[in-house]
Image (cartoon, rainbow, N blue to C red; front, side, top):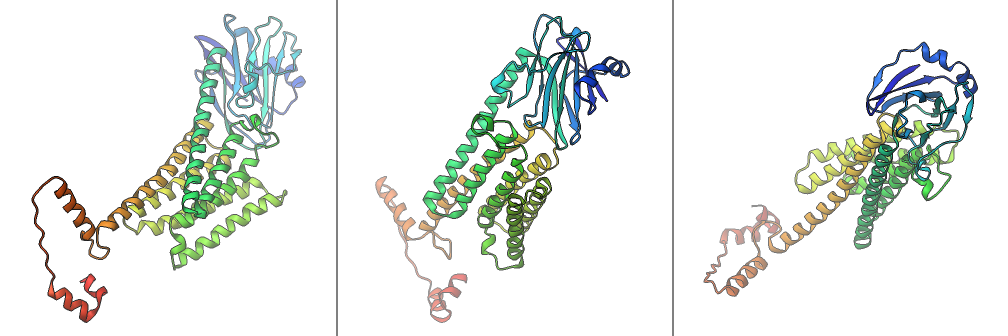
Length: 415
């Protein structure tokens, strides 16, 4: 059994965390004895707990220690718990209320929370919760006012992330309609699936659609990785290679797609294991792309390398959080926000580089990289417009003429 004490506005609030699978009537009968046998430690901030898979936990609050001048809320920063139930007990350890007492009912799906009642008939507050997979969650007891402010800030943050994801989808859509290149359509599909997975992970799907379980985010993110890998296949120019790297890439990409399809069609397949496998395969693909691009030079190669690294960071984040349940929602959301912005920025930078390269090719010779006739005429027009004096000297090297006539233009240009 874990025990901890939360301090709220200088008032010490004893809180215990008990790990037991006993139902509420058994826990209530031996509650005082269990608490008396345990040592309490002070906790100034909400505590992050590591839950075991299929293990039941009880959060116990001594209501006699609550200051009566304000309301408090007990909350869990994980919207996708397998089970969560709130109880109030009287002095005789009898259940007074089996219903959830939420201060902000409409947002309870985003952050499960319960209003702690100061009724004198209530002696203890009990919160029972569990998850079907091992996961790290944040549990806290704060004043109702503080909780509402923090929750509204959280909702605004979610809105900002959704806005960025919609912007990324818009950018990809514009690129596809202009260029008609399929890779931008796959990147758009990647962002659509990422958005759905983000909403499931943060309890936002209940506002739009019902029936999507927490485990569905594994399959959704798995397909997102497939679309992301296909996009990198073209964006990183792997498809232009004529080496064994391309064959290995295609083989691993095929394995990733087959794994996602099997996870969709075979209910007996372990979704978590197949998801972890897909993340590892994607990181292997990214490693191959980095190995190839690291040897290259130029701004375009650097942009490609940054794109691979950005998607690799997102895949590794999913592996750690969704695969192994390590971390927290805030960290994952921050990573998602920055990686999404980075992907859009890299697309825009690549487009800007393409325009700059096109403008340069219009005014410079492709072989010698020297200014051509077009740039000369442009500079002359500027001089004329500003009424400036200038001179033009024309010469033709005989050596270059003879070299072209003897060895051909390609040899002469290299020379």
